[in-house]
Image (tube, rainbow, N blue to C red; front, side, top):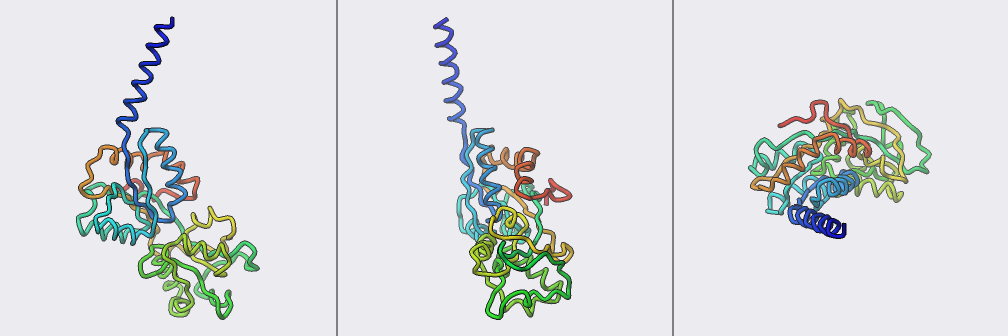
Length: 262
C-alpha cells in the first residue's frame, strides 16, 4: 500500500512539474476601461490553464504607440477600431487574428450625492446648464482617448460640441475621467457604462443615443511576429463562453456579429 501511495505521489509531482514547465506568460495590453474585467479574466485563465497573463492598462492610443515603439505585447485589446487599424496599417498585428471582442455604451455620470436626477439627452439638452460657471465636464481627451472620441461624436451629433468643448476637463484615459467625478472634482463626466457600473461614488444620469456616435467596439488581435501557441489559445478563450460570462458580469456585451474577423 505504501508503495502505491509513494508511486501515486511521485506521479502527481511529475504532473505538477510538467504543468509548471509548460506554463506560458502572455503579455496583454488592454484599454484602461477593461481593468477590472481583464484582472478577473487573468485570474480565471490562470486557474484553468496554468498560463499567466501580464496585464498593462492605459489609453488605447498610448498602448498602440508603445507597441509601435517595440513594446513586447503579445495581445492587444483596444477600446476602439481606430487604434487597432492604426497598428494594422503598420503591419503590427498578425494577419487574420483581429476580431470584434466586446461592445459598450456611453453615459453621463454625476457624483452619487449630486442633486441631478435622471434625464433624457436630446439636441435640446444643454449640458452646460447642469454645471456651475467654473465647473468642467470630465472626459477622456477627445484628441486620442477612445471614450473622448466617442464623446465628441455624440456631442457633435447633438449640436453641442462647440459650446461644451471649452468646458471639458480632459483626462489621459477614461478611468482618470471617472476618478475626477468620483472625487467630486467634476460635477459631470462622460464615460463608458461599464466604468460607471464598477464605481461606488457615481451614478448614471443619462445614456447617450447610440446613433449619435460610432458603435463602441473593442477589437482584439495578436501582435505581429508573436509566435507563442499560448497566445492563440488565449485569443480563442477570450472569444468563447467562459470569458463572455466574465465580461458580462462587468457590464460588457458581445458585438452583434461577434466573433468577427476584421
